Image (tube, rainbow, N blue to C red):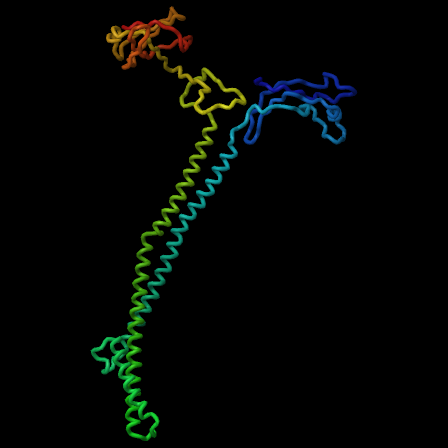
Length: 374
């Protein structure tokens, strides 16, 4: 593909029929397509009558071409270069970053909720303490009647209820007698006393129950507070951490895919071969460029037999003369002796690698050389 772009510029306003002097032909560098752009090679340019009207600086249905500007026209062309699907990958990165932010906020919310819950737990402990104190005070100020001595609160309620039922049964027999009847009056007094004892027993049970409930609430509030000291719920935190990790992994994967759109050299060197063709689709693993590091040059032998290689050792000095440069002798050192043999021309041979300590800029890859081991 040509490396320049041929342009026809409007040099001056034509008078009458356009002449070549009204135009200027220039060549400019081909621009690199930017993000979301494509580069098109024009194959055909349509020359239409309306283009004459645009050469004049008069009001018309089409805007005039400015002096020094490229003459515009409709073309038929082909796409020759395109920035890879960067927009799609960049959108994936943006979405993943948004998800990462949401995941991090959700994780932080767990800790924030714990702080709120700790404050609520402290309030609950304070309220439960007050309830225990008030219930204990009320129970301490209750005087157990002599009729309930030796009985628990529940036993007292049962015993006093039985006595009340017996007194009521006895009173029912004489209930309709005259109020001045001595038997009726005695049984009525017995019934009133039994009712009072029963009410007292129920009150005692209520006070003890209130204290037990207050103590239970206090224990729960203390336990809840202790549970919150460890932080958020382990399962919820694990889920939040997994969500953050997944978002981070998605970002890393997308950024790696974006980086893969760029061909980057892994070493410092010189490009000695380039097989890229504009518009060509390259399959994964296909070599498209060869990069050479000329700071060090190696020579490899391919004809040292098993009888000769035993005389060679690593760090041994050697001299090298290229067939194309017979007047130049380059010194080197044996760096490596192959452990695995090859069979060539009926002989068992071993490859020896020699690092040159000198360099001639005329030396090229693949040149035939003669090696002398010292």
